[in-house]
Length: 219
Image (tube, rainbow, N blue to C red; front, side, top):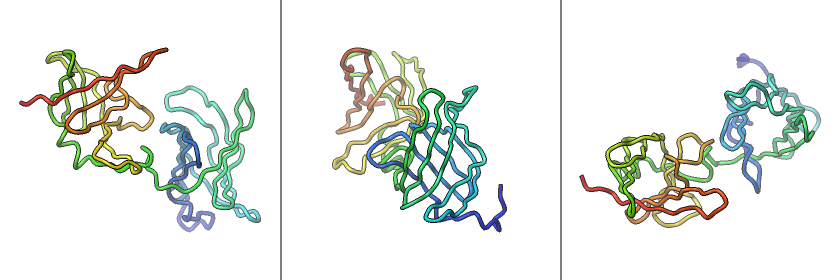
C-alpha cells in the first residue's frame, strides 16, 4: 500500500466506472487500489499512481495482466490507462486480436447492475419450501441460501441476493446469484417472485427455454 502522503493519489476517482451503451467491463476504485471486472468476475486487482500529462491523467498500474480467478495465465495485458474528458480509457492488448479500447464513466450501478437490493423485504417472503406446479421438484430457501431437489432431498445450493430493477414498476422481485459473475440460481435462470408465484426458466440448447413455476408450501 502507498502511504497517504503520496501526492500521486487523487481520490476524485473513487467509485465505480462502466461503459455507456453496453455491459461487460467495470472498474471499482478506492484510494490507490483498482479492481477491474469482466461480466462480474474480477480480472485485475492492483495499486496505481497517477500522473498529469496535459489534459489527461495517466494511471500507472502496478499490475497489468488481465486474468480470471483460478486461471493459470492471463488473457490480455493493459497497455495504457488514462482519464480524460470524464472517461477512463483502457487500451488492452490481446495475443490474437491485438489492441482493444474501452472507455468507462462514473456509474451509480452496483455489481448487479441498475438495481436496488431488497433482501430485508424479500427474503422473509421466500423462506420455506416451494413446489413446482406440474412436477415433483422443490426449491427451499433458508436465510440467503436456495437449494433445489426432489421430494425431501435438496442439492445445488446457491447463495442469493434479491433485487428490484430500478427502471421497472410493480412488485416483481428478482432472485439472483450472490456472485455477480454467475447468472444461475440452482440451475435456473431468470428467477423472479411476483404475485405469490416464483417463476424461472431452464435454458435449453438450440431450443426455447422451458418456463416453470413454483408455489409456496404451507408448513
